[in-house]
Image (cartoon, rainbow, N blue to C red; front, side):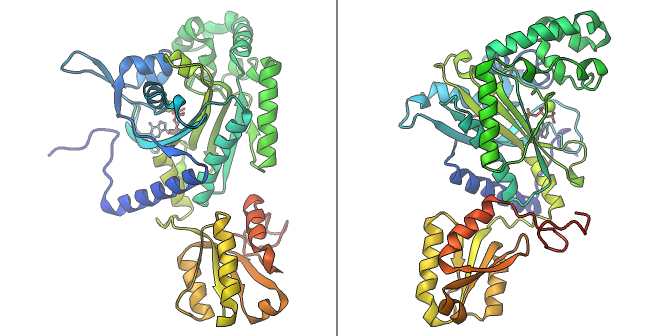
Length: 440
Ligand code: ATP
Ligand code: MG
């Protein structure tokens, strides 16, 4: 009997439903951020990955699936998506398109020859995004916000965004010199890979899976301490934009990422969920200002991220995701014929403002409409009846926090947007604001 290849898996119909749901949610969130889908081949010339990801990286030196085809071409099954997207961006001259910024996303299989374990496979799926055409930290902030929104769309709450800056080329060079001086006398105590990297690409030593936690590397100089003025400014602005969007992050001075091409921002999102086990990084990304030019394109900067979709799927087991991605922001319950005109007006306002919203069309009872709202997975349920009409009020319940309040009718849209932006501090157990009794 034939068996599947080590490190691969079959998706059976009971699972494909969940995957389709996951993909649909990703498409939806991507639309909100105005990113468009791109699909590139799953194999490319080997050289592309050598030039972009870098020869000294684990991905290229140990993990690629390489073969020579019948025409004697050296081919590699793609281990990641950025190189292919950049290749396609250059080859198809997308930079000459109608818009100065190209915002692209992709989903599909990647291949790495790794030791298979939970959350780590030889064929795995990634969802990634790349934005080209601006050096502004605003775009870094958007990319991070986009990644966080995807995670939030799945109602995964227990996440941590780790952020760092490795600076521009000049800062990286200054840092590299400091690192080399620091490591020089003790380099022999590190693994043989690190000793090679010391000669070829010392920055990569910080990311070594074997030596990462040694005192020598823990006490090594940190990239953020070597940022020049421009790089520091970029990083400070990014932090300010994230603060403005109320996106929580932790600065991790030791964070560098496995690929060669990063400049300035690097980040990872970890989810602290039991079902993930040790592989708890679900997303990683950063800025790459010289990748496009180093692959033969114009001097155009980029920034992006990639999610491991199997890990996202494992995370969803912890939050009891039932494959129902069709969430609504608002289900509006209107009671009584006289209230309907106001009702459609309110609904329309919310829809025009971009909220996924719906309403009942069958004059169902209050109870039945509540059920409809539940079945459509609505976060906010608003009730508008006779009393509310008389007082120009509306009652709004937040299903995520359990919070229920009566507000001015005309404030419905603003209220929902504000709540979406400000995650409530309500305790998950007693639903009280800022509770410190339940040990949450
Ligand atoms: P790790 O440190 O876990 O090996 P990485 O730095 O190699 O991750 P990236 O190249 O940044 O990972 O890929 C982005 C995401 O893809 C990772 O955060 C992870 O969720 C996922 N991923 C990477 N390798 C695998 C794999 N072999 N199997 C499943 N998912 C993977
Ligand atoms: Mg890896």
